[in-house]
Image (cartoon, rainbow, N blue to C red; front, top):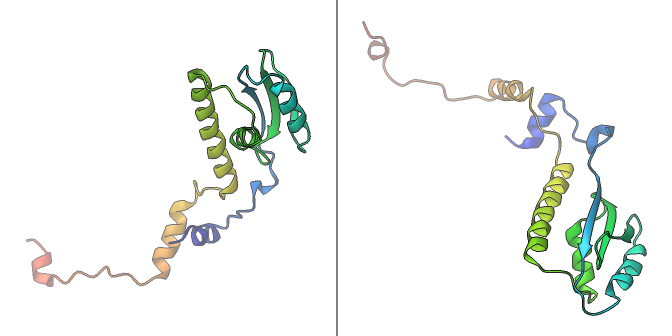
Length: 151
């Protein structure tokens, strides 16, 4: 059975978010830069401030920026990729690479989960019962009656 059929039989709507407020959409991440070339942090801040829905401020560490964005509009991966494509040099220390990989995974999973319909949790068994009743099924035993009964 297709997932859409199961949702229809259970009477579930799979509009996006059902009008409910979804928490955790606003992200605040740190982007670190290499020491060379000089002044790239200021230039990157100017470039990022031009993007709608993205706020940028200086980080607590030197050569870092703090960006705030909605996960529905941006991801850290897309922001850093656009900076790299524009010629900026991001920090590639082991710690930064590990944090970056974790954040990329978490954000992509969250974006995927937000785009998928609500899961059937409580009514899933009722859906399959309805489908089972509606379709002919081959619950027929070809064994003769005298061999089925053990006496």
